[in-house]
Image (tube, rainbow, N blue to C red):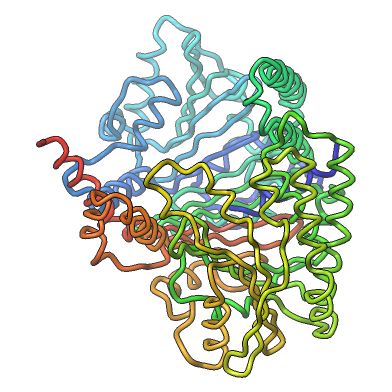
Length: 614
């Protein structure tokens, strides 16, 4: 498999986180962080996936409260009931219907997978009245078969599956064999999934009530089951894409990336050990925390060896921006990720030549080594829209060798831009895209508050907007250049319409002006995600919407009317994404303050209603 496929896969993991079980036959105690009455204690050890919910009713109430806050006019939605009915092909519509049958949905519940090829779903649920539920099962199973296994009777219902009732827990499965394993697990004749080393090593919190959903998947077992099918389907898909590209040249764009993503996905699956996920819903705040653990001897371990430290540059970023973030990775990793990002983003045309791509990639690698040689392993970045659709990019790099950085930026930086353009051209990128770095030359410098700001002029940026429709010329930038300065042991680097991003940061570093740490939503995000991560992103969709509406309003007065609805909506950071390397894997965090979107939702509904009245 080509390295680029693997790097692209690693990039996708980032833009967004070995043991052997032995059983002695003695009584198995409940695993740590698993309550004695948890249904996890009866789910067999060879289960390949489980979704555990501490309380279905509690989750349903939280979802309804959220929807009532965001869309007060909509009736309550029975989301958990709808999902379960769809999964098991059942006819109920509400959780109340299930409670009337004697199920106790206030207590913990789980859906688990015994196999993935084909999919084999089962469910474990507590019951309020075991005798009533037993009568119901016997009634439903009338005319079908009943069997006794290890002293416990279970019932089969033809093609619909099997039921077993043990104490106050009922299990439904599509397989009688699964019911027998559940019986053996409940009788302590075999371990439960909660007793396995893989599950316990994740230290999932299933008891405190903090998590509304906890999920676990044995990715190595899933990979073994799906590998032949996925490999065959992947080859068929690539063959079909190539055939389509031969008859439709437009489809050839992106063919290389699509193949790399497919190959990379298979490679990632082979490297994976387990995947866990927790979901927390607190009012209008949603937090999702996945953790992908890799095999101890997997190749990917070399890419995730750097442990996270405290992120220290965020405070110097703009107070208001569409995206602010910071990353900590070894420089070698950053170089490889730069290549992977380019190969992922730039459409590969039908004239792309593999040999030329490899040659151009090697050239860019050498140029990137020079760029990063005097820089550290940590950098922060910001993205925002100014007066055009060409966003302003801004970076803060740690400087470890100032003389080396200055020499490179003054003497060799255009080679880096040329190598970047070379890879774009080798991949078949259009001349407009590849040519944006052509004819770049050193521009004027200026002194701002005692700091020298230098520049590079990019004269061909307007070629990217050459084919705009009539009347849309205003969305193109008047200019877009590179500006940089070295200040306080850091390189400030901007690709923007002017040097203002660099100047503003110089002011913030001097204690003048508010930074990102004083932005609306910052405290909530950093409190939920912490600052000890390899990667941290904060997004303000409201800021992006306001900026884009302002840009398009110059051409369309009707769009300008939308600004009236947006004036009083605060520009807050509503989405946070973080990841850190730990415990042979990558832990991710996604935090969304859904309440921040309430005004936008109300605005959209109002505009729809206004449109309906016309």
